[in-house]
Length: 427
Image (cartoon, rainbow, N blue to C red; front, side, top):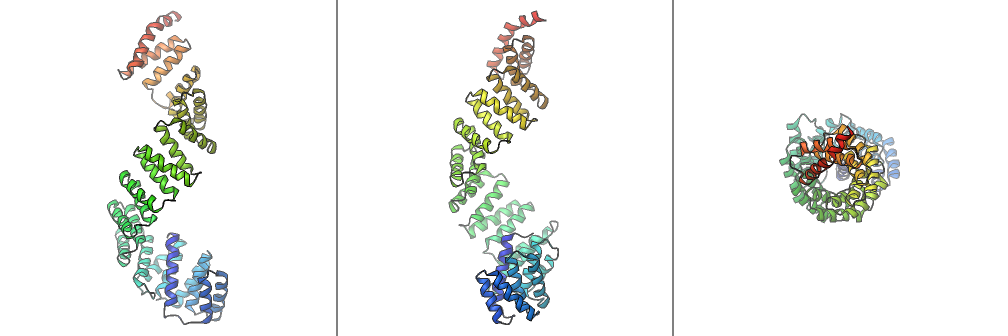
């Protein structure tokens, strides 16, 4: 299916060409109808045109104009019927075939390619024939089966050759090249589009998206920086630049761009989510907490957000509040092993040792044990004076830690000296 923007552009271009063409006879009713069309008085134009075709069913110009009017009113079935009538009367007319093909393509009708193909072999009657033919070739290329790569490439080549100064065809060709796996070719076409229209937000957005999909972050950053200069009031541009800067771990710059996005649109929740994440990584825990609280208030069933809020609360030693957030998190997402680990640490910090052990046991069912898991479980059992279990876990920790955690290993050995005799007594 063709894009709506290209669809509308082609129809408008074709209509202007028809008005200047010599194929249709001038009639006062037609002139009045087209004047109403210029004013976007669609109901008035439709009424005049229906009277014309009722009086003369062979008036191709009236059928053509009626097709455009019905399209403008989103009555696509009537628009197609009108264009079919125009084509039946003048089968060798470029504009009639082009517009019928475009309408059929918009509706997913397989007949579209037949009329667009015919249009590419006809002569446009308007003032810019090469550009009109480029429209036809580009529209036909968009309908080409994915399996016929050579034919599609040829059609796009026709379009960009006929209208070398139009960036939209470069972008269309670039998008197809990317889908075909030719990322270098796609970049070439997108770059040409930026050279042709350096003040266009669309071309810089297309180039940035190409780089982001390819994970070429420095290049994406460069394109997005150009985008925010030509579209300074576009919050999505600042959001995307903020995300790329965040991925590059340029936290200060990412924060600045995300704040710009939020200044332009206060309820840009994606920007706020990214900002909270960046602030958390940058150890701005109080600011991150404020933003996470706003997010969980708006998205109370989002486990990731409860996990994020819990994490920044724990970093501020607010263990009871963190524990509550992690409890909500695992209730929403009961198969998230890492969240159970977070809950265990928060519960232990809150001196809820039995809950911490339960959380560690839940984690163990989902993920392999870690040295940290054994040590935390051991300390919880130690606090509960369940020394046999504490000894078992201290020993398990020492068996796998292998010098990676010298401070905890020192504590484990000294606690074993202290509690192992007690554990033996209880046996």
